[in-house]
Image 1 (cartoon, rainbow, N blue to C red):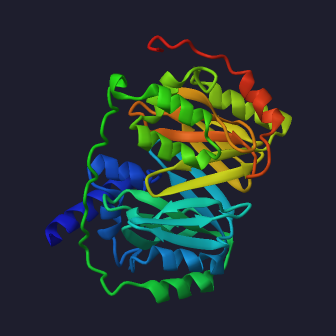
Image 2 (image 1 turned 90 degrees about the vertical axis):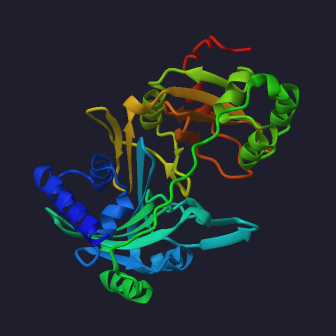
Amino acid sequence: MQSTVTDLKTSYAELKAQNPEMRIRNAAQILEVSEAELLVCQIGDGVLRLNNKPEEILAEIHLLGEVMALTRNQSCVHERKGIYNNAQFHTHGKMKTGIFVNPDIDLRLFMMHWAHSFAVFENTKTGVRKSIQFFDKSGTALHKIYMTNKSIDVAYAALLDNFKSDNQGSSIEIEQYSTAQSDRPDSEIDWQGFRASWEALKDTHAFFPMLKKFGVGREQGFRKIGEDFAYEVPLSSVRDVMESARDSGCEIMVFVGNRGCIQIHTGTVKKLVDFDNWFNVLDPMFNLHLNEDDIARAWVTKKPTEDGLVTAVELFDKGGEIITTLFGKRKPGDPELELWREIVARLPAKKLSNAA
């Protein structure tokens, strides 16, 4: 194992020397290993393994003051500055969840996927960048927390001292997730029952359990439900919606997630910037980086709640995975913003060739 770790560390160092600006996620893809494996081969050299107690660690992050929260998937990166107040964790059978509800740090956590924790020190042009990073069992990053110039360094040092693992070895157990199952054939679905359940929704949080109950894939449901509840729109729709929200001052909600974490921004977006194939929001407290080349389909969806219809713009990649979802700003008990509905209503519907 040691020679393998040494070889990997050498290969990574050579790759970084050739591409100083390359991010570790891209390096891991090139070297055909997980990001966590790249961190482990650097333990003792800018990487510290932490005890795998993510709930306890997260409950103490507020002591660091203002930090930057980063959650991403393959196609989109969501960065939000704030303080990790109001940590809550719950266990329901095998389901372990966490939640942070704050104006800035707003997270939904699925803790059963959190398998590895590290502190990372990276040398950059502006100095050492300090972070705490969490990974799933496959070594894929779930959530990262970066210190900012407003963070409390002494609290960061104390947290690392408190949660430092006794195991600072260079091995890590990596376990791949099974391949996602394909959708059931349309002919096997109770579409009449599915339609009735959709019409009877009272809360957006009941939507995923409804899909599971009927054995329906998310986009499969969109294709069959009818255009009063879901219709496909052009791939440029997220750009159009963001620009309209910027120009009108409409406050929106931007959700980006992976299997272990969903991160939410609520507020305005102002500075929209293109860079190659990436569409970016570059605001002081919120950054978004969206790879537009990865967008395969975009949908407008409408879900009934006790407060009226909730309208969303949902983006999917070629594999049917959600990239990001946009809503108008709202809280339970409040109706949806009319300005948001007007913005979304301007998106042209695409005609579906495989509609029922």
